[in-house]
Amino acid sequence: MCGVAGFLQRGRLGEDAASVAAAMGRAIAHRGPDHAAVWCDDEAGLAFAHQRLSILDLSPTGNQPMQSRSGRFVVTYNGEIYNFRQLRAELGDIEWSGTSDTEVLVAAIERWGVRGALERLNGMFAFAVWDRQDRILTLARDRLGEKPLFYGVSGDTFLFGSELKALQAHPRFDGVLDRDALACMLRFDYVPAPLSIWKGIGKLASGHYVEISDGGRTVGLQIPYWSLTDAAIDGGANRFNDRAEMERELEQLLSDSVAMRMVSDVPLGAFLSGGVDSSVTVALMQAQSARPVRTFTIGFEDAAFDEAPKARAVAAHLGTDHTELYVSPQDALGVIPSLPRIWDEPFGDSSQIPTFLVSELGRRSVKVALSGDGGDELFGGYSRYRAIDRAWSKLGRIPFALRSGLARAVSAAGGDSMIPGPLGRAANFMAAVNFEDLYRWRISRIGDPGRLLLDGPGGNCGAASFGPVPFLTDAVEKMMYIDTLTYLPEDVLTKVDRASMAVSLETRAPFLDHRVVEFAWRLPQSERMAPDGGKRILRAIGARHLPADLFNQRKMGFSVPVPAWLKGPLRGWAEDLLAPERLARDGIFQPAAIRQLWTDFLAGKPRHDRLLWNILMFQAWHAAKS
Image (cartoon, rainbow, N blue to C red; front, side, top):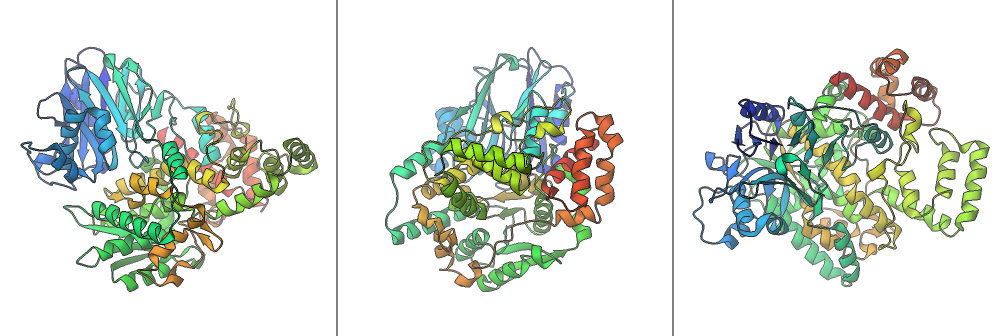
């Protein structure tokens, strides 16, 4: 794990280029506090910065930026290549300097080219590679989007970095708020790729690379080197039909994925919530470890949000070295002032708070932690899947013309409000043109965020408004596909990356091995969404290591009591951020509309807490930038 940054400009670098690159690196030093370095190609106008978090080969031979043996390629790279040993053997008789995966990555690029290397990599990564011969800069990101990479042109300079704060450290950064991106964040809790909160700066999409040439003036289109669409189509054409075979193969594959992610030259552990995904991960870790695996969980005094007893039971059965920390409301609330700094783009998923706290707990003992992220999207873990499937199975049988007429009637009866209550949600569902349209409404906090903004855009949110998925017919599979492309990288993995890297902790997700993803799409849907709940096949695998009743408890999720906080200890903070005079001065939100939301919330009218939290997260971010 590390932090990367850099810039490419037309013409030679100035005398201050190295210090500018170093400042970009220092802005993300938390991602890699063990070593910092810059590398410059003065004639070509390129500068790289790297912040290293040493995990493999702790010696200086693993430091970056790193050049290939011929000197043609230079790379600055964030992540882990889990199959680096296999690639090293495939590369053959090379005089290696050390044992790092970075050296293998550079050699792979020199041997096979960037795309050829990408297609062979099993890992999580975001990297920049400079071809000194052809003067082409290539940026690349892992298949599922575990590691972030921002880039864009500001003034006459091309900038890139692991986090926006690295780009903002460049003196030519020109930050202009993108109101389309803000509208998307209000609607979905996050700013989706390829947008960022700043105009002209975007995110590299997962599974893609992009080439930049001509001194940063020519930025190519994002090019996919792996496709979830292909995985879903191929999986549908090659379904398993033998339950024993698929369970056996999946357990072997997950065990191999876990083993690859346990390779580390520093202490390693795992997050354990007691849910299916983290329990299976830890069980497979412990089955391959000669010593007790270190596991970490946090608990809350409010039993409605406390999963620590479940985690404790799993840890006791497996015999892990378990650390548990109960946090008070004051502990959790104390994180809030740091959120704009950690997520330097407004981010509305309130589970960012417990994710940061468990990362902080784990970092006291280990430098690497495995997690169960990805299990819900791949194996049907979200309860909304079943509820929405049932709703569409009824609505979808009604002709659209009739449904749209009913929707207009419901709206006229009181369903047409800025934030839909039950009638409004019913109207939106009935007006859905297709299933994807219905799902878009279901996952939205507000249908038309432009109504909250001064001179705001409409409610489509541009690139975030996903289209039809015609190659899938099953509604649950459509939702899983959409979530894997959007919610997983833009919300879940963004949350985990920023929270863990804020405390210099590397997280690894065995479920996000692309081989596991491709395998999951070969499963019959009955093995994911069974009548007795989601993740049937994972529960079966887990039951080989743990008592089955540990998986039969209600899923709580990693959440915090936002409504109670906003009406209690956070009320003064919220009132200040939502003050009409502040809103009018900022010139972004419609003051009257925001105050009405707040007043309705305090009065106990239809719940607006998730939308209000998004607004507050933007306001806190905006105040920190001012």
